[in-house]
Amino acid sequence: MLLKHGLLGDYKFVGKEGVLSFVRQTGCIQFDPVDVCGRNADLVLQSRIKDYQKTMLYELLYIDRKLVDYFDKNLAILPIENWKYFARERQAHRSWERSHTEIVEVQERVREEIARRGPLCSADLDIVEKVSWYWSDTRLSRAVLEHMYFVGELGIHHKSGTLKYYDLIENCIPAEFLNQPEPYPLDFNYRKWLVSERIGSVGLLWNRASDAWLGIQGLKAAQRNAIFEMLLKEEKIIEVKVEEIGEQTDLEDAAGDIRTEDQECRIAAGVQ
Image (cartoon, rainbow, N blue to C red):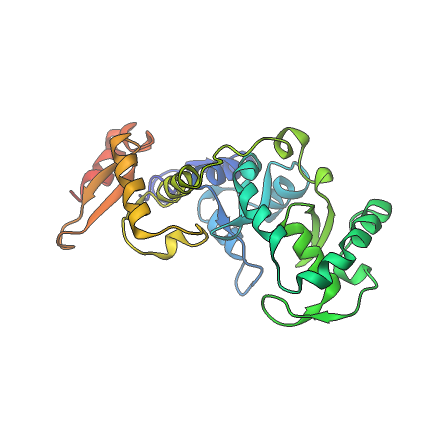
């Protein structure tokens, strides 16, 4: 586990390319703007990436456009090639949102403003009404920008501290990724991909209720059991029994990395 996450021995991930490789391996890093002794994403990367600098993550997100911030479990930083997987999440926001009526009334105006003026933050919009929003009442200008971001009409062009500047999505995500079709139109296959991704990102998860499944809408125990069984049959995961945890069975990602080095196998399988 420590080797998989680059926390044992020599650095497995190095520099800016190491940041990109780690995010692709883990699927996502939770984004949290709270900064007490460092933001979550920076702390995660600093502990795993040799020569890590905050500017590397910023450049990958807002200059190189190889990463993107969107929702996977929580607000997260994702490989930009994963944008296509979350089309149904964006569609869900189109049909319902808090203060939906008020937002719909002004969103075309906001779209025209951004198209004419370029990237804007909520303070740049003269929309001062207050509406009910997810964490507390807020200005309608903020709610409409976030809604349009949730549905994929806007992207985050850049940030100034914690202040987000939004632009039309086609200016934030290259067309080759923006226009890709959804790979898993069936609910079961989509949830199967998400479960597999979560197991692979952590490396060891058991088949029971857990915060690891946050954000997988509609995932029930029966379907989760069926997905685990299918992943086992497809040999995408393997069973690992852990001493002193009784009959509980964990599952280890078997996408190749635990079978490539003897040392890695010993650590992953030494708990059997």
